[in-house]
View: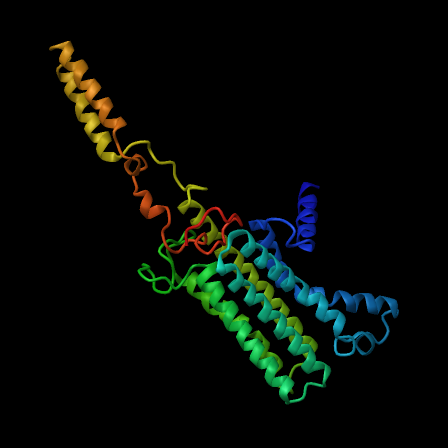
Length: 320
């Protein structure tokens, strides 16, 4: 029951996008709906088929005949993400969010040009050229954003070429390389609509929709991995609990304690003075040594989603 309430509450937030601060849950859920546009577009088909007693469904309720309704339904998730990006720019003043919004705008233009081409009978004219142009722009735009921003891949100085310095799931880069190649290929799945012969367009749509859901399934894993790395870099989450002193201070303290034990039978005043000196050493450690790392390197390192303003949707924290 609580899970259903959470889902209904967050979907309702998508419907009023732009009226409140955008959090990680908001834009993450919006991206999931962007991969379900095939199902959303056919909500009209289901309603139309039901009203016609499921007779001659494709001739009466096909997207070619009633293309405005499916077009509005499938572009709605992209419109929501566009509004969210504008709102995040308004809150943070980061140009990155407007660039991200351009990605969703290119997707909207791709679907508008596609349905325009289909409504004209799929001729090889200017409408076809415009659709191919916008589809190519959208695919390249989205692929680069996936790799560079959402996954933080293609970084210099990485142990594994074309990846990032930190990998949480495994040090075996094969699954990451597979994700890169498959993600880019599925982004260009629209090319299967170009041939005039072969498979029926309805079957092509089912194949494209299934591959897109698989692409989003794998995208989620690497997007959340990148989010976790960004959170640990900003000390919002940790993979380990650091000791409140550096390792050198610990060894020095051990040596001092050993000296005290050896001289315990000697002068008590000298032993007490050594104890006070050891305590002062621990208190005088700089903050960068307290956590055993240089905060200047961990706080603000390149590659985190927060320099892009992507992380939890709170613009007060920046890194990337």
